[in-house]
Length: 162
Image 1: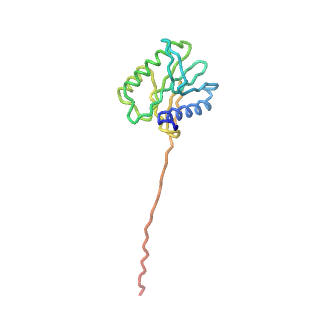
Image 2: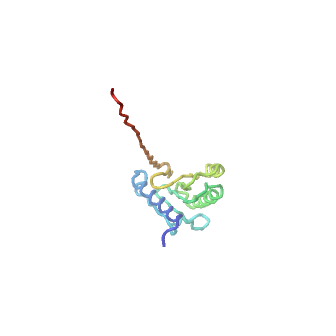
């Protein structure tokens, strides 16, 4: 059975983060994990399923992927902030960073809440157009395509010389 669009998007983001962190010296030895079995325990005792996580000896980045056709609104930010709070409380020795990644920008309300709770709102359209923040690093890729064409019409007129 082929993956759903949401599963394909999570895989895209996972692979992109894995590739980006493997080339960054600040992520040397980082463990990148993802998928339905990727769980991080919270102080509540609940095991949170995390779409993509990046673990170093001092930092943990948790990434929630949203393959939506509409902008991210306040509700998913609030839910992710609660997850972030629970995971932070369970891991006092780690700096926990959170990123909500989507195919669309966020609403003004979602942006305000994300700033308050310390959640990055990032956009990944595909493997060539993305911006993702992990820890204190920003990874971005933009591919510009220029199409140029020119046409010229010419008409040859022969004159009668004389």
